[in-house]
Image (cartoon, rainbow, N blue to C red; front, side):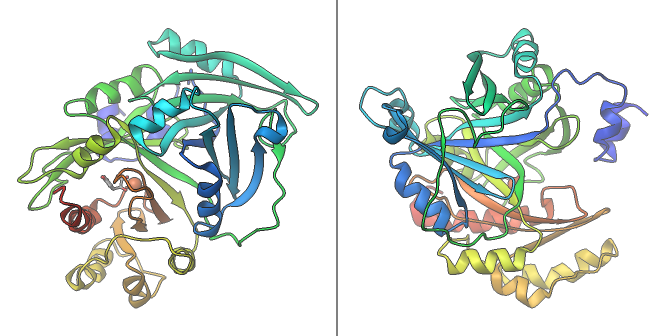
Length: 387
Ligand code: TYF
Ligand code: FE
């Protein structure tokens, strides 16, 4: 089968890569690091609102004089919140320009040196050469390359490490331990890039990282009456890492991608999709804990759902009234259905937000929900005066 044929039936990742040597084997997402203005308060927010647990810490008490980092964990997800301790730290420049946001999308590898060499050889711009960090629990090797904007991919090799997170960190024991919200792993992370830049980054992920473009949405599919965008989903060989890339498109009014680029002052991570296996429970809890979601889709949206599921002969296991009351959206394709919902931006700048997703067989990204979703985003843009 040729690549194009496989692409036309959409999800044949294993086939696409069959036989080809993967020069960048990725085991999964390792961690996501945010640069923030006040890591202590951000850590409290992610524990209280999203159900993350205290995991590791580095700061003045551990000998880190220039920056503080809190590491939070929920099942397989690790978030690192880092803040500078003085005006000389280069982290300040990132925060001044972008506000709070994602600096590092770290990828878990078996061989960080090889990951670095293979990607730099193929054109990646170096951020950090392979660096061995050690303590009494062993060693971690990390190396980094730049991706879009000022965002970094770090390759993390931890097969010879038994400590908590990384050398330099201590286990963070806290007396405040709110319960988990059932978030399990990162399903995908989306990047917003500038006008005309999507294909440049698609090619970069193909050439430098060996990824494949396995789904594409153009502005004819992704638009509302007012705005539009284009999106291509990049995936690595084993399908564990999925990075959709968005670019704004011309519409009657301002694209949400353009709004992001204006406020982030450049390309960056737009949303982090986290998976749960009980979205009803997770979203009920998140709402109780104060997480703000986009406004509910209209009644007409839910009226159309049964028909959409029937078209693919899928039976909805969840109660549709419950999903409707929680504002959870439903999309279906040949292989199954998926449930998803989006938070409002989690900072004052309308930049990064979260998606909660439960896959019931479907491997897509909710294309059937795009219209309802974007109309809901536009209602927020209108309130902000940025539509
Ligand atoms: O990741 C996705 O493709 C979906 C839908 O600005 C989406 O979550 C696409 C673009 C966007 C917001 C959500
Ligand atoms: Fe998404």
